[in-house]
Length: 438
Figure: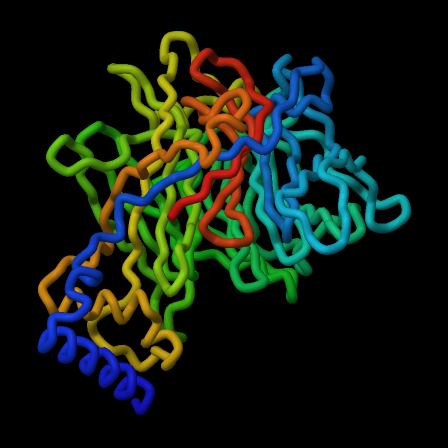
């Protein structure tokens, strides 16, 4: 209670002083959105018609430290990429390192297993590893495996992790699921099973104990999911007028039931927001000082008569990312940010002093006291900024419309990397971009 009282006193003092002398009123009333997006192309690769080609879709890219690791997917020829891992250095460190490397799949233990080639798998950075789960094989069938593969970046080798008790409940084989790092555990959501049926289940794998734990099923199955500060966020939508954000807080107090919360949001000319899409990127970002957002960008939608959730979540699994010609998609090139609440205006016993007096939380409390909207639970379309040096920029200055790419948040928390995907012509790309939001 002392911590809460101290935090409340600090906020009250700032609010009172601001109200009395009028200092800082502009800053607290200034909106935090729209954000500005700067694009930098980091690499391009030409299609060499081999399984090592980096022109691909349905792959994953995961950031560990200052490197991005590309794995799996389909190349421009429609064939599975090899099971090699491609390493790209995003930012140089004091110790000289290669900018790019192709790492063959070798086991961590002699004669141990390595993952086969795959596409539409789930992957995420996990400590010093890249974790991989599920996917489709060359024939477009779900791989008959339920293990978690770990690519140990320090040793450039693979190991396989299985539950301690093989008879205990665990996720069924699947493709197109989502995998997240959550406090030294792995969170798995959704995807499609062997029959092509959409899944809505949520599982948590305890790496220390090698056990799975199931959470309540999500209200929907969606390809748009992200984990931010212990909360699983899922976006779903079936029309151009509104969509829903579904939330599940994982770290609720002991003895409290886990429950999903749904927040609808309009997407119309009066209240702009991102239109329904699939094959898009949804990532948690931060601008520091306790201010957090979801970045929702690019992806594909259906023409009139089609539906993004239907084509993404109920079609029979196929190694082809593009829907059939009768449902040819249109690709987006926009970036939207959703501002997550920095705090509740009601003090909670779980607050620590460091959490309670984060600058973003103080600012939002001031805005609330002065009658301004803090911007929580609201969308804004990012403003694309020109490159800092137009003369030095060679080639494209923007990825253009595309979907089914790989993406991940970078070390600074406000930038993300994306690689490849399918462009508006239906062709697979082989370029890499860094997008910075501020």
